Length: 185
Length: 259
Image 1 (cartoon, chains in turn purple, green):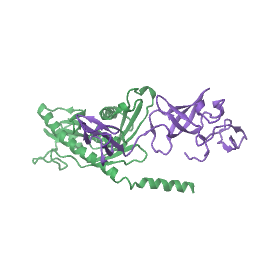
Image 2 (image 1 turned 180 degrees about the horizontal axis):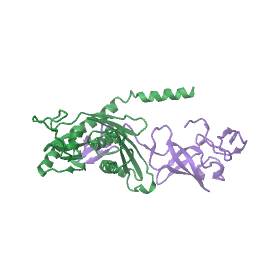
Image 3 (image 1 turned 135 degrees about the horizontal axis):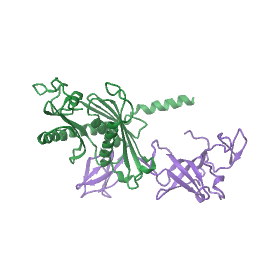
Image 4 (image 1 turned 135 degrees about the vertical axis):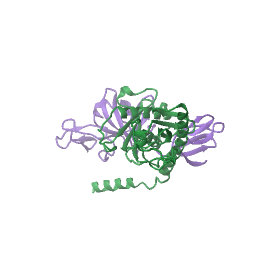
């Protein structure tokens, strides 16, 4: 394996020897780089790859993402993904996603509206990216990380398994993540 | 703007231009990649007295939705001249000229980017001219293509651009302000040196067929030189990446606000 920094348009190999893969393309019998990054000529698989220095954030199964709930339907919650956890860069590709009622919690869920409300910020796991983005919040680390009171919009705080609004003393039910309220956006 | 008349000699008897260059000499060119922290990719170009900043975002979801292309990404470029970029204050905002330049730069970049990998997405390129001295569209496109590469967007090649013109009846490379204003022709070209593909070409004024061929020859050589500077800018960006001072600044600010 050879490591070398290449830039778009650089000739990295000949087409007879290697197949183009991520970050490379074939042109006129040659393999050229399409990204700025480290060249990786895989001798086993015979593919020429470029690992980008500044990779795009494309969602994959298992990624942890932050989203805002936009709508609650009978069998699913619809949300808008605004960040991938641990990534500085905005995500590339579809940002609207859905969470099916069966993937919402490890417990039985009768009503999606009892677990998520529009405007809630949640952490979720990507379980499908094509043809549409599907998320899951079954594990304890996933669920609501920030929510506000339905009546007065004051931020809710954790109170046992539920969330409580301090000013108006309302108690609301949610599928909360284990670190509710600890995240600074 | 060419066509205005003047009594000053743009080229002297020794073939030297008013800024001391020979007819086939470029102005000093300096490119720096990755100058902006918040943008996905960025580049800063100083080309003679031109100062141009380019920033790239994306590929990200395209808004408004009706502009999305279900088969490929679109490249949306905004070329803007700041009000203090020229000697008389420029009225801010888009005008006929900057809309045209935005369109041709978008089209040139769309050709090199592998847009089919990102359906429904938009790649946004912002070009800000801080200081203008003829040839800003070429400087802008040169900066934008370095910024795209810095953003990690897959593309066929970098796009160097240069203007060739005619002053005092002679073909000259890389026009300056005076040659642009009082010269006889202006021919901006963007060309991939490796393949010779022309991505942008406009012409203002008149040239004979022979003059045009010579201009193209100058342009081809100059694009290769600009291309080498672009590559060098990216190489420097990725070899000194460890010492990024901005990150530390931001962290110390956050610590202060929490304390």
